[in-house]
Each structure stands twice: as C-alpha cells, then as structure tokens.
Length: 253
Image 1 (cartoon, rainbow, N blue to C red):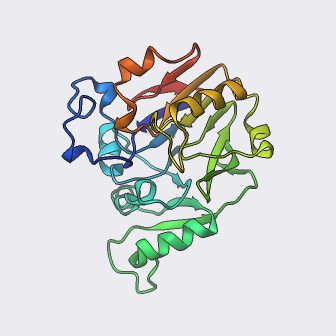
Image 2 (cartoon, rainbow, N blue to C red):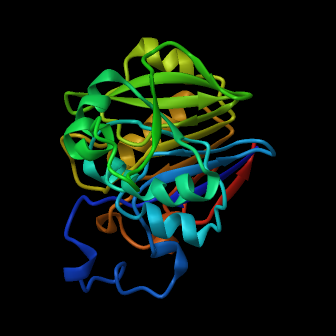
C-alpha cells in the first residue's frame, strides 16, 4: 500500500497570494504546500482522504487515473471544497465515486453542493454513493479504517488508523480513550500548524510532545502553516524520528 501526501499545507494564516515571506517565496519544493490531503493506492483501490480546494491540481500532479473513494475528516472548506471535481472521474469511469462521511459532514456537503443531491439529476453533475461513517471501524475493499475522534477546538474531527499508520489533520485535543487507538502505530501523521499558540491546532511543541507520548517509530507533521517557517530550518529543530511531511512524499505501509 502506497501513501502519497497530496498536500501538507493549510488555509490558516495570511493567504500565499498576498504574502512575500521567505516560505511563500521559497524555491525549495518542500515549502510549496497545497491543502492537506493524502492518496492511498493499492493494486485494486485508490482512495483519497479529503478533497480541498486544490483537489483537481493534486489529482493531475499525482497522475491519478482512477478514483474509488473519498473519505472526509470534517466539513471545513479546506477539506471539502474540491469535491465537485470528481465529475472527471465519473466521466472516465462511467459511474459514481464512493464518499464516506459522518452525518454532520453529510449535512455540510448537502449545503455546499445542493445540486449533487437534487433529485432532478442535472446532466454532468458529480455522481456519488454516500456512505455514513462514525466511530465504528469500516472497510473500503481490503483497506480497514479505524476512526479516531479528536477535537479541533470544539469541533469533532475524524482521524484514521490503517494498519500501523495513523493520520490526523486537525487536532488540538485527543482524549485518553482515543490515544489508545493510536498507540502501537509505527507511523504517525499529525498536524503542526505553527510555533505560536493556536485555539484549534497543535503548535510545533504540542505536536512534538504528542508524538513523543505516542511513541511511533516515525512521525510526520502535516497541516503546516507558512508561519511555521521553512522546511530546512524547522527540520533542524526536530527530535530524532520526527520529520515535516511535504507534498509528494510517499510511504509504503
């Protein structure tokens, strides 16, 4: 199973288009961060976790030719805004794409994309098969997902454990019960927004402390704001076994 980081950035902070800081003007590819998402590929299945505003370009950049499913962590725009662009896969595959989301996220999708759910069935709209998930483990083909609930300020957000790989994008608080689901992971991916305190995201130091508590063999930080700093500079500050993820990074699990 191959995991590709389609995006490791965030909409938090000053928009890149208006920013002339060292990160946003850097020529280092590690500092070119699209909105956070990962691609899961097996011989018979292709799954994406979250489809943010950069979804179309991410699919083109990663040369994804087939898409079976999208799994959503939560309903914020930087995680769902690109769902309309599955229509290209509908056309190529001549069928719907499976979408997995909890009931709250489904309500948000219906508000954001009402035409998708309109019984009139306007020609060319995205075609989806909607599946309800919660905290009960579920399978997509041979891929077994264990949902992990974290709090993004007061908003419940789902992370997922797949085998010994755990992926969490928007955490500020993780209960002891949910930590037990994570422990034993060989690879942990967790958000590290910036060094300064933030109401709904782990800071760099909070992410480091969480990673050390979990004790995974390898931890990667994602959902990185330009405020965190340049990849090469932050890499020097990280303990052994912890790295910044970057767009295009691939892992075999």
